[in-house]
Image 1: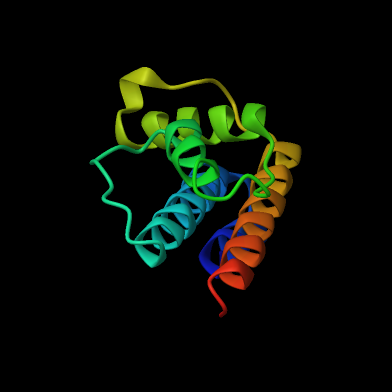
Image 2: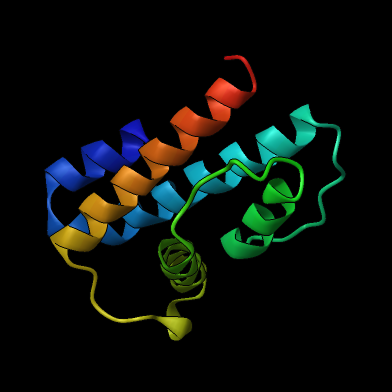
Length: 113
């Protein structure tokens, strides 16, 4: 998340990378939570799928599905430029950072960190 914040501060030329790192933070937080609960994880980058698997182990997990869908799209667009999902606004970056902070805080707490 620190990288995402620094890239946001540098400016709009780096917003695409910033939201990519937010997606990565959420993906790794969710997968870490699943590993903590000894759940085998397929190779998947779809945050909605990973979140659904995590919620099947803890129904109290909270998250905005539409935000997870959007962040998954950003990750695909970053990895595969031909699949670009449009311009990223500063509001998009701020929302992505907020979502990453939310998931990291919630999942870290649930893992006792």
